[in-house]
Image 1 (cartoon, rainbow, N blue to C red):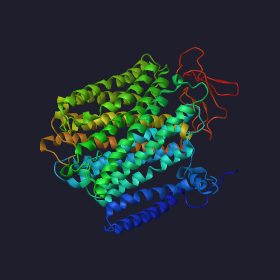
Image 2: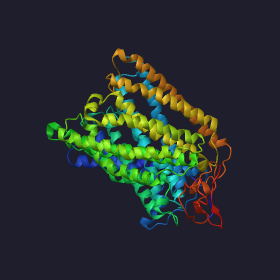
Image 3: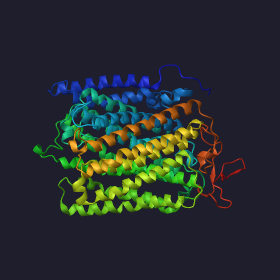
Image 4: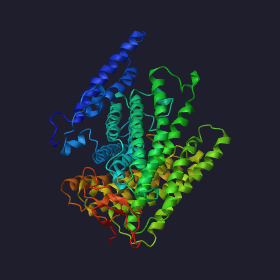
Length: 617
């Protein structure tokens, strides 16, 4: 069938129309039900919560679920997919490579929006008193910044590179469920819409954690936070199922578990955690929504509810979510240090075991976030021990990277710089995390800027640095063009220096007792806050370099060869960008992809009678 440009509105327009119609119909239905039971027909939260699911369904049907999936359910022929060119990135495209780019651009947009909110926060905190915004506005901005950044850290790397790269790395032609893959992405734009819409309804001041009962009593904007979190959770679960099935069932001939690239292992373990734990945070959000809209009292102590119940459910997901954020960055880091050191990955089996160990232990550490909540003393010691123990497999991954670097022929390309940045920053975050795992120290430092600094060293210094390392590494594969190396190095050094200038002084602020999530502080802390704010502005400016480099290189960058890095994994053995079904013939895997320096080491037979061996430099 010939491919032609699709005539008519693109998916986003159709989805917006479908979502609007869905909201109107859903709201009308909820209002009719309320009137029938004798309640006041219009109540903004009840009507909005009920109509959200119908609006979400209308959005999905509009963007393409009806045309390219659901029509046969009603005896109608499936519409042929005729979209081509740039329009594919705005449509319900089932190609895993298109979906990976959709995820990447969407979450980079969310990341930069959250960064702008951070600049507003740091401007306000340069001096004591209210300068730019009042305390209520500051709390709403702070909450939205934290929520967006956490969403980026949770889903950006898995969504972008888990979709684009993993199928190629295992020798597959696509994901196991292509239409389900597209569905998982198109659940994301409504998340961004809900978060930004919260501003129009008073915002929410609960921070990204949304603790009840405060979150039950907040303005209507808090409801949009709950709906956004619930919707992203649904996307994460759907995407996790797809990744797990793809890795288990679609590996190329000879791609045994012991030959999987370490990045695939990191995404695979992350997907398992997402599938298991995300349902718990979805339950927490649903319980808050029911408290707000249906008269439930799960978290109202005056009516027999238990506020700590929310914290237990929330952190049972959200501490594993910390590893959901960081494990993909670990995978990228180990992948890069092997390729750019020209050495086999040191202790590969131990590194895989460490990923599995983190996955298994992540479910028994959540309550260290609650040491100051009034829990029984008998529970503190077990969670102290479990939190300390999980640092062991984390350390194994760190040592695997150091062992790979040792005596390697290191090439300091831009992706490698970001990988080294992950190692340095996560070392700071990991060491300070050990302190916070100890009950006496945690009691003193809980809810101070010490925790803010620790969390950012782990998530921004580890997870987001890993994300940018992956962008620079796989950008030639995704676009067929090279990014400017000088601009990339300028971005790295300004980001690295700005990051440490921003968050290292926060440890000192925390030790002096400055509370997080507040818009003001005592005058004696003003000089430290000026230093932090100046570092924050410098950090923010580093991303202007990236944005220019990213856009200019995509449009006019030099064309990339198939394998600019001389790497051995499968994605670098095919053209850049890859053809539609990735491989002309299915590859046959002969050995692991890290055989640098090993005589006669060949990773794969790519067909056509030629064995691939990209031993270079």
